[in-house]
Length: 506
Image 1 (spheres, one colour):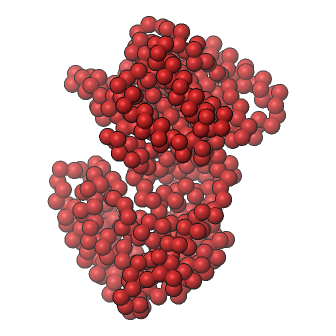
Image 2 (cartoon, rainbow, N blue to C red):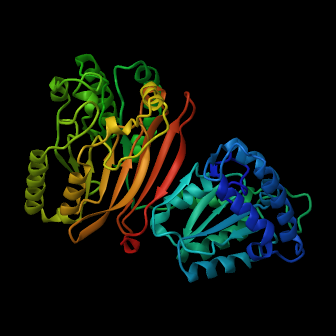
């Protein structure tokens, strides 16, 4: 719905089965989902006809199964006519969050005297208790996701892309401003023949968004730089340009390993220069970096070479007063064969003792958020074969995961459970990923969130990647955004994921 009510962005990827379900709901039950305004009583039936034609066109895409994700170009072609109909309004509103009060507020907005300029979207059910993830979030919906700490509320947007979120108690104030702004622009629908555009609404929403306070703590998560490769050399200018603004807007930068491609003094020096630039942009706050298998073994696979690791320094626990977080740094590459990872028992004991001592000496740390940084992924997963190694292994029927996994990852799960550390940031697999799973040992259990970053300098031809992570202390939610640049193109948000409120977690 965010896409079909917008003219300013390309289509997102959507699973074919989900898109069919959406179109069939509009086709066969339009009166249930669409409430017409006076003088437009036939509108639901008109939309049903359009949705029916789109569904027929979608069924002709036999080369995709219902579980497969459709490319944006296919989605755009299928929804072209429906988008033309629904983006005809000047202003849109979507209720996000949970509760009957929220839906009642949305119904009141729908009855406001907006003269046919406003389309209100009211979800029938509350958000899921699990993490909520969106592929290629349209700008307006991204605004809603990044305001998750303030849900429930209403997100407003125009077809031109202007958008803003209002908490429940602020909705009446924003509605008054929008009603006044209605007369500042030109409109297409309703009793204003010949009027076009939504300039008045655009101006109101931009003013409102610029004044929105936020108490979220923000992290920039980088990983798998692989300095010393051709990809890193060619891609660094683009990443440097992107980071000039971003680093200034976050509380801390973390880098989860594979800083260079193989232990080499020149490659370590390249990373040191990159690190110094981030430190300068961050006003003297240097990034927190850990090592990966490529920093300690030749091409990440053979031998043990810690010389360059000594050059870049090694930290175990970093307390950040500004964002009130404690970063617990593990070296998952000190053991483990080839590219596999393993954390030794002595390392668990050493870091556990240091963390316990810190907490005893500084009682205020009980209110700080602890985060584990580790290079290897704590939960195994497969990715489509993209690199030459992955393709070669797939030809002979082998999973690359068998050569990349963290051995005895359950030991890390148990350590986190013992110390009530609920978040792990990692890299290694060159694939951004958000996972939340229950971990348990004996009678104890808790949800453990794992957030992985792709390769920030596009190793092995992968997209350039970084994660922007926001932590909302009041609701204890993570709002994670994964950004990618493909073939030198602009970075765009490809995934946004919101964790459930702590009250909804088992």
